[in-house]
Image (cartoon, rainbow, N blue to C red):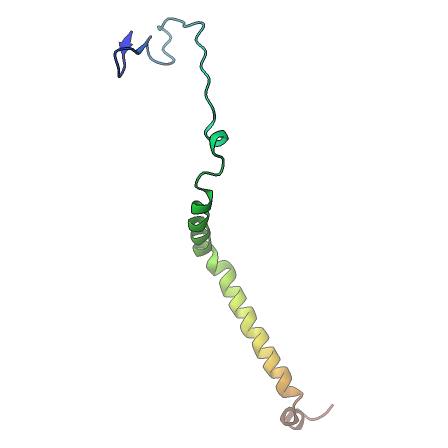
Amino acid sequence: MKLIGRRSRLVKGEWGDPRSLRQKGIVTYSISGNRVNPLAGTFKAAIFDIFRRTRGQILYWGLPMFVAYRAMEWAVERNEYTYSKAGRVEYGEE
């Protein structure tokens, strides 16, 4: 038997040691950590997780969004010019 921490607590052998004596009749109950407070730290962690994930993914969706926005902006300007008086004179009415 080993003394652990306080003098009142004795443990027979190490956990899983095949030479230790079998202990019968010892029942322990515990409650899971997520049963006590399942949302502990969720909102605080969410802010940092959103920042971390966005920073890691910004080039995958930010760059295509920027290119698509610029292409649409160019297309709208081109369309407005084409159907203006100056555009009709330049390209001719078809």
